[in-house]
Image 1 (cartoon, rainbow, N blue to C red):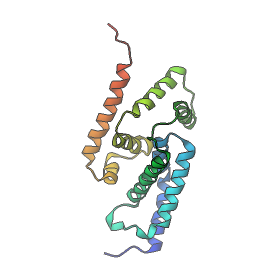
Image 2: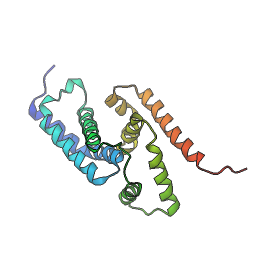
Image 3: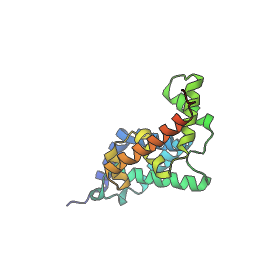
Image 4: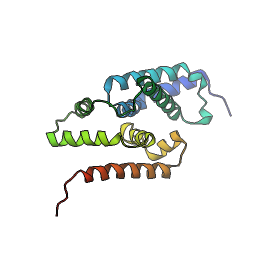
Length: 179
């Protein structure tokens, strides 16, 4: 098997950057719920990946997985530096960021529902939050998430289904019983 040269690795990185960097930002934004922090983490992840590109070994996996691994470590370092969990941000700030990015206005009830969902996300385990962020923030498929987390795609599907079920149960529990 031929070992990839620096120029081949750089070409792979450029292709990834042009085609898929937005999913990295989506993942980090979903995790932080803060545009500025997500932009900083995205930039630092891309810089770190470029600085360490000579360490990337294509025979061990896809470049995308390797870069997302760096991003996950950058995010954990950020959390340690902040001494807080990922969803402990001002709910109003998170909702405003989500609203601004989608380019539509929400009525009061919809904003309230979004705030509740964000609050309930805090109750999920760190792994469940990460899988939801990878699936819905980065837009990755179960197989891609499985590859990044070194688990099976069926396990990803089960974890996603359980996490979403927990969120749904919490949302349904808040509704008054109608008899």
